[in-house]
Length: 145
Image (cartoon, rainbow, N blue to C red; front, side, top):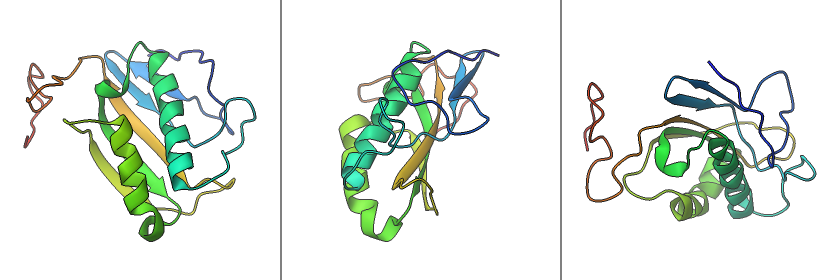
């Protein structure tokens, strides 16, 4: 198991690390919309918060030599899921492209002024970015396409 020292992203606000690698798998902790320079959430709408959280996720993955194409699962917490769902999903699609990772999105009471927090599970195997399901070559892992 390895822990990467990561630069260019905000430090955790508690007793946890941003990510852990176990073999070819990378697991991230909750990543919010904090600005790397201040450690505080960006100002603005759910779109601004979503973009910053996904930039932070991108930086965490990059420390492991991965990018968003390696993400297989994403869990997203929104402070106001009813108000923010549509705009959040539009911005999410700016960063993720088919085949999309599986995703769970829930409403949560988030602290520190965050409108969004997310975590991800990624695998070093680069998914097929064409017309495939993204599971080609992943023997033993099932997909409904």
